[in-house]
Image (cartoon, rainbow, N blue to C red):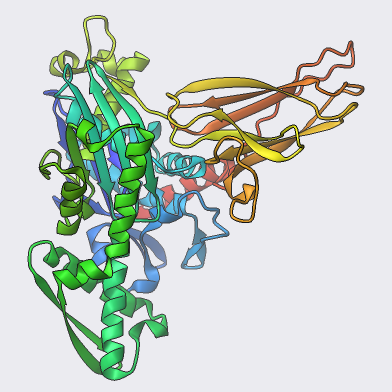
Length: 537
């Protein structure tokens, strides 16, 4: 029987988990016996055959083979291949294709460990990911040969990992999730048999890599002061990889020690840098402030204060930095227990739990064949899952309309934090007699009645648009119905139609207006075939 798993596809490290025969979530180690896998891809060619090496071996060779390395791929998810192509051996790869290689490695290692085929998975993403980033993640799973049951928010997965053994209690949980490349803060509620998202906010371009980059810049500046040359000016990838490796090691040392020592060699000259923890905190104080501000924002959106938080979960490897733990403890006024969940593993474990709950809720054959301990833990006497996970829309979803002053404004169809999945229908009127077309512009992330100005360009928030052809002779104010369908993955389907009755000439047209810049279905199929032909290790 095939196995279902949960996958935390991370910026710097990824992890995979399953529910074992005893009903317990369990991290699946890779072939190196490591519980997490570096999200790094290396291309190597041997005897005319392209090999794809993923994980620790790829990371360890990043300095020597920097031109053949792809990392921090998650930060480019959702972008078109043309905007951020990575070329290896004459072939351009999209973020989806590179992420699929990481997933393929994880899938292969998990199958070897469990000695069974893996077909289905829940894959997690930052809560603040937009539509295109979520669709790109699903595409990556498809390319890797996975049936993606659901794209799940990372903080929700962490809260599920924590809350699964605390059902029946009433707790408000604050999830502080700082990974290698992304940051989310989320308020979750564990109540009875429900785990529900109350509010979330985040920054998909803030993570441990930004702390690493500050150390890299500092080392380069110290070398320039001593020798008059800045190592970063050459744009030497191998040198950058070397500095990055040393910066990460220094950052990790500073989580345990008061100071770290770094050696930088460039053009035959050497600089020895001693970095104190206090100096490191000074260099990154603005990054810490960005975290603090987002904590305040999400509490405001939840209409709550720190007093109302029962538990604080620190998720993501970057929360091991003392400055993070101290800041959260200071602003919350609470004692922080960094061991409430494993920061590296909680998201994958929550995803594995959700994968099992998904199978149960779908009434699949796999659910019927689950071992008794799994059934006892996750299935109630009515055959339904014992726990219900309720996620909310993490961004407003709107449509551009004209107000009474004929100004273009955003009308929110699905407000942020609306429980998903959901379907909303609204009617809008035509603005002129005999109007021939209506432009449907779908927006994500704009406030109600927000107007376009120099700072807020609508195109930056546009998910898609289409032109709806209307029946002839319609009077001003004739109704047009727009329907937004938002699924569990938090990807959107939009349809629009004229519902005016105009005798036999009435036209009822339905359009799907979301045209993402991600790979289309045909490209995903082609990428899957290409990946099957590659040797992934």
